[in-house]
Length: 312
Image (cartoon, rainbow, N blue to C red):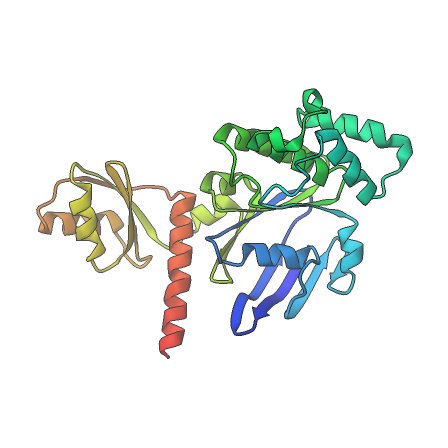
């Protein structure tokens, strides 16, 4: 699955700006970014629900938007909000979707029974969807999205309204689907979910600012990463935010993570000198980046480039 120069404009607003993607099959490909970064818009263009303003897209061997209807036959789509009928039972919702997918009657019962078992819904077959918990609704929505055994499963922030354990169970299911050959596209703003993806695209203001395996993005972060342990985190933060060469500072309890300019040879030394000059005590060391550090470094760099272009 590939996208070249993918762009979408809504009047004067450029929601997606010249994005290039290379998405492998039978893997989980994640889109990470804040609200308004273009995640949902890209997903809708990839599955043929939204026509690009410009660019080329190939999905499962089909051209989009020219062959969008063919693409739709091979994808499952799960929205952020629960979109099935709350006044129907679990089984009735699945039977309705089976009719929409035009599944053959001869194996309908077997498919529904299998879906109920896979998604731990067998004991809720006759329960009305509107009375289910958030995690149960999520599993029902996923059962419906995969009932026709799609080659491509698209999930638009699917875990935004469920508890941590339900999110963990949900991701176990996704890995099982990938093992069976399904390609999964998922948008998220949770760092722990992004780390679970095989490949990841980081988006900001409609632009692709980083792409690759999470561990490679962490390894190749365009910044120095320094951790500070201190009894006065607020003073440290105020000090470092005014220090040349420090890009950002994030507080994690009594610890802080500081990102420094990639050109700084000794990031920890820069921080130690700044704290010493301000007479602030703290233990300072260079550390390995985490994905949140990568996200902050990538999006700050994108914002800096855009601001410079606007000024010019």
